[in-house]
Length: 219
Ligand SMILES: NC(=O)c1ccc[n+]([C@@H]2O[C@H](COP(=O)([O-])OP(=O)(O)OC[C@H]3O[C@@H](n4cnc5c(N)ncnc54)[C@H](OP(=O)(O)O)[C@@H]3O)[C@@H](O)[C@H]2O)c1
Image 1 (cartoon, protein in one colour):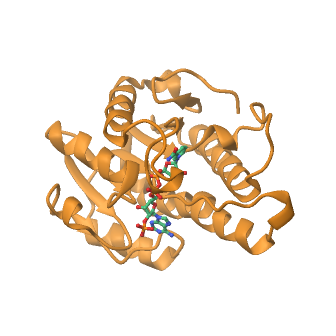
Image 2 (cartoon, helix red, strand yellow):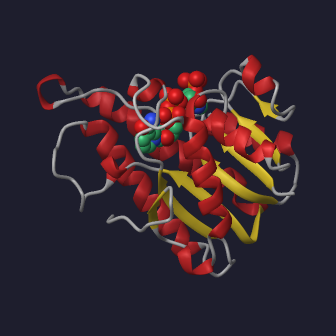
C-alpha cells in the first residue's frame, strides 16, 4: 500500500487520481480548498481549507499529516485563465504564477522531508508549458506559469537526486474537466494511465517531462 498525497483532489483530474489510487488500495491524503461529497466518499484523509498559494496553510497541512513517509506526492491543483494578447493583464499572469508555479513550490518545500529514497514527486504540467513545443502562442499566463513549474521540476530533480527522490513533470493530455469545459478524455481514464506510468518510474526517469503514457516531451 502506497502513501499518496494529492493537491486539488476534490474535482476534475485530482478527484479521478484519488479514485485511481484508493481503488488500488492505496492510502490517499488530499489537500484542497473545500471538500466535496464525491471526495468524502473516497478517503477520510482530507485537509480542507488549504489554498496552495498560502505558505502557512500548506505548512499547517503538512504538520496535520504528521511525520509519515510519503511514497507519491502529486502537485495536481492548477488554474487556467483565458488570456490572449488582446485581453492580457499582468494580474492574471501573476495569479497563474502564484497557483501553478509557486503553489507546487510551497508543497514541495513543506513535504520534501517526508519523501524518501524511491519516493516520487509528480508535478502535473501541460504541453502548453513547453517552450520547445510552442507553435500556437496565446494563453500567456498559463504557458508562462507552467514553464516556471517545469523549471521547478527540473531543478528539484537535480537537487533531490542524491536522496533518490524521483521528480517528473507529467502532461495528462486534454482532459474533460471544468478547465476544458468538459472536452477531452475522461479524467478516470487519464488518472488510470497516469497511475500506471507513475508506478513504472525509476531513478533514471528523474528530471523528465513526460506524457501520461511515459513518452518524453520537449521542455
Ligand atoms: N484539463 C486538461 O485538459 C489539462 C491539460 C493539461 C494539464 N492540466 C493540469 O491538470 C491539473 C488539474 O486540472 P483539471 O483539468 O482537473 O482542472 P479543474 O477541474 O479546474 O481542477 C483544478 C483543481 O485545482 C484546484 N485549485 C485551483 N487553485 C487552487 C488553489 N489556489 N489552492 C488549492 N487548490 C486549487 C481546484 O480547486 P477548487 O475547486 O477549490 O477551485 C481544483 O481542485 C492542473 O494542474 C492543470 O493545469 C489539465
